[in-house]
Length: 416
Image (cartoon, rainbow, N blue to C red; front, side, top):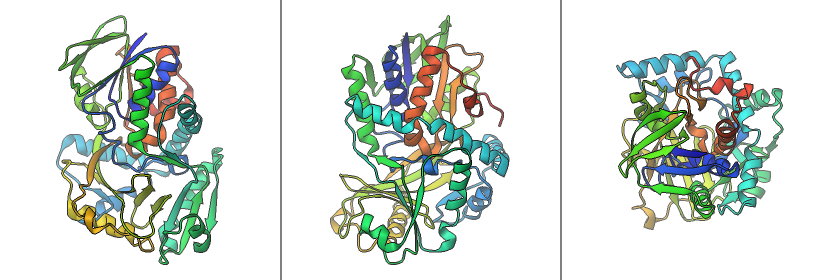
């Protein structure tokens, strides 16, 4: 079976690796360069402990309140666009307590194999940077960190096996000496990890090539058309590609690609920012979540990655340097003495799209009425966390015809 995967980000490549393990012939079509897309600038967290839907009680009000705040971490700006207004209305409906809990359970079910698959990558010889030790959740105030315990309790009720530990600042500093005196509350998640996302994507791509599969970079897909029997033709600027099955893993670009097929894919782009710096002072070496500022930090071998902002809808990928500098300054306020070096003043930040669905759940599985077409898209801020298990699930769906009942809340044709 030949499977064409459109999108060479972390989700598409994870699907490719899992399909290869099941004996499929894989061709990945990436419009840019592997490792340079939407997954490039994120913190690389593999974090089932904090895999919860953005669509939750209070989120819409918080986002709208920040609509005019130039420094808002979560910003939802109303626009007089019919498609956006429909999305926003669906988001509002999905943010009820009942639907939020259903979303928590759906993501938990998807995450059950996350670490198993991640370890299988390493065992298979995929080279990538990975760190353990959990995530340190930091609060300057009790109010700032108060959301975390109830969310963890929701996960425990449905069988989540990870744990959390409340630490004093001294205990936390034994793990991460870079922490500031301003931090009053620390919770450590015990099972979470983080990876350098570019290294994971490059490692998966290189392993697929080593196994004899086809990775095509800088290939733009112009359209899709069925050719009978579940087979598809993918038209590209380098000529057509025919395949027995097609997986669309194009994130925020999915609506534009699938629209000509008459498919209304409910994904809007949310803009996020990040920057990676060596810095000066006591350098963070762990994964840190700064609750009041809603900023994530990862201590990679190459430097400190700082990521923040979730702006809906995203309009462009221009880096607003003033806003990015504010994110960096906020992150530094949680750290003892680390700060960007003067020589790094010219380091360019990054802005990218997070593919957001109204209920914050990905679109996974076969497209009804389009035999042979599958979706693996809409992972929002959880692309790296959900990618390994998404790859396994899609491989089982494509090759084995599996349709597990627990995937029902994430099916592509669910009502919004």
